Image 1 (cartoon, rainbow, N blue to C red):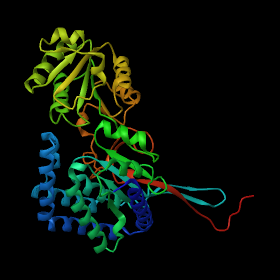
Image 2 (image 1 turned 180 degrees about the horizontal axis):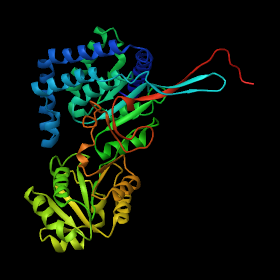
Image 3 (image 1 turned 90 degrees about the vertical axis):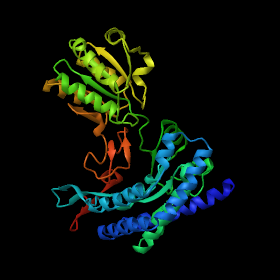
Image 4 (image 1 turned 120 degrees about the horizontal axis):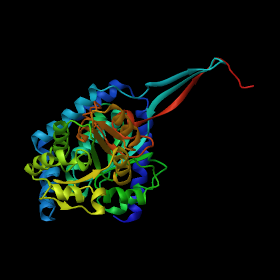
Amino acid sequence: MNTKDYKSELLSMGERALIASRQLAVTSSQQKNDCLEIMADTIEENEIEIIKANETDLDNGLKNGLPSSMIDRLRLDSRRIKSMADGLRELVKLEDPVGSVISTNIRPNGLTIKKVSVPIGVIGIIYESRPNVTVDAAGLCLKSGNAAILRGGSESINTNLILARCISRACLNANLNESSVQLLPWTAREAVNFMLKMDSYINLIIPRGGENLIHKVVETSTIPIIKHYKGVCNIYIDDSADIDMAVNIVENAKCQRSGVCNAVENVLIHEDIVEVITPKLAKRLLKNDVSIVGDSKIYQLVPEAQKATEGDWSEEYLSLKLSIKCVSDLDEAVQMINRYGSGHSDSIITDNKANADYFMRGVDSSTVYHNASTRFTDGFEFGMGAEIGISTDKLHARGPMGLRELNTYKYLVYGNGQVRG
C-alpha cells in the first residue's frame, strides 16, 4: 500500500473515530459496562483463534531474532487471555469518571458554574510488543468515554488484529459504534507517521514503549502527547533512617522486578551513616546478584563495586545494576535527584518528619515517597484498577494514569435570564 492509500484510509478512520467519540461522550455507564462484559466474554470465546494468531507472531518473532524478553511479553496462553478478560471485568466495577462534578461555584448574580469531568475525545495509543495493551487500552478508553485508535508493534500484528475484531464485535453487540476502538492494520512506519499528524481528529497521543519509540513520536507528532522517557528512580537514605528498613526497601525497589520503570537505579546515602549501612546494603544486594557501581567512598567500602561514571547517575539500567553515592546532606540529595533523575519516582528513608517534608516538597517528580519502595508507582497499586501508562509530564496528567486522567473538563453554567451589564 502506498502513502496515498494510508492517508485516505487513516483519514476515514479519524472521521469514524470522531463520530464515535461524540456518541460515547453521551453513552450511559450501564451501556459502557455492558460492552466491557461482552468484550471480555468475546475474547474468552475466541481463545483458540487468538492463540493461533499469536503462534504466528511468535514464530515470526523467533525467525526475526526477537530477544527472549520480548518473546515472553508477546506470548499469550489461556491464563494470560483470562487475565485480559478479567481486567475488563474489573473495569466494570470502577466508578465512571464522566460527568463527575469537580467543583461548583455560585456567583453573586445567581449563575451556578459547575466544573465537570468529560472525555478527552479521540486518543491514539502507540505501543510495542505486549498484545494485552490492545485490550487494556480499549477498555480504559471506552470506560472513560473516549474513542481509541491503536497502533501496536509489528511483532504482534496478527494477535492484535484478532483482538481488535473481538473488540469491534463486542461494541456492535452492545449497540455501540464499532469504530469506538480501531486498530491500524499496517506495520509500515509511514502509516504511523501520518497518524501522528492527524490533529484534526485525534486529541491526544499516548506512546507506551522504550525511550527510542517515545522520542520518535515526540519528534513527529503535531498532536499533544503524554509520556515518560525513562524511569531513573532514586532512594535517599537520610542520617536518621532505620537501617534495616532502608536495606529492605532498597532490596525491594531494585530486586523485586529490576526491568521496570519504577525500579530504583540510584541510592544516595548520608555521609554520617554511609560506613554503617553500606556494607549491610551491599551484602544484601550482592546476594541478589546486583552489580554495584559507586563513587569513591562506596568504591572504598565495597570491594566488589565498580567506579561510577558521570553517565551512571542518569542511566536507566532496567537490570540488576545499581549506582550508589555518598552525599553530604539532604540538600545535596535533592539537588542530585532533580539534576539526574527523570521525574518519575523517588523516595526518602528517614525518621525525621521535617526532612521528609522538605524532600517531598523539593523533589520535582510525579511521585515522591517517604519510607516506601518506588515499586508502588502503578495504577493498580494506587487503587485506580488499571492504568494506561505513567506520565512524567505536568500537563494535564502526572504519575500513573487511570480512568480519571483520560478525562478533561468543561464548565456547565446555569442561569435564569442573567445578562452581562
